[in-house]
Length: 159
Ligand code: HEC
Image (cartoon, rainbow, N blue to C red; front, side):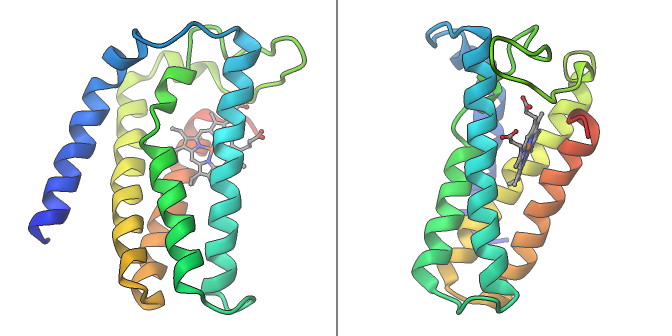
């Protein structure tokens, strides 16, 4: 592991720990806004994962800049403090917004930490891999991120 990777991972862990402190300094959102922004964040990441997947499986030509943009967008979404969008009660539909968040999210903090930690590490690795411009390095990092997405969905997203 390079020194830069170690430093990035340390920063990721510190960000994770400071998440709850930061949340207290943010503006209050209405429950339907919380759900809307949360779903939008994940939908945006999904678009970027879809682009990477298409480049990696050859259904569109590999483009270094597109891959870098997609990975950077994913990693910045990972580090955007979306934890603040998990306000108590946001596992219930609100206004026009339906949610698939499972209530277990609020009762299994250790599992939340586990999936969030894997996700942050995967984000850092994906951004670093995309910076190499080498699809053979991006592929395993993409797969690791895919597993991190799935790990959280299996635990905390309804079908
Ligand atoms: C920390 C847990 C967690 C991680 C990590 C996570 N998700 Fe999700 N995701 C959720 C939850 C919870 C929902 C349901 C949100 C809701 O309905 O309020 C969701 C919803 C979604 C949705 C549906 C959004 C919508 O408009 O309803 C997509 C698409 C999605 N995630 C993709 C991804 C992708 C791609 C990744 C990885 C790059 C990812 N998610 C990582 C928890 C997670």
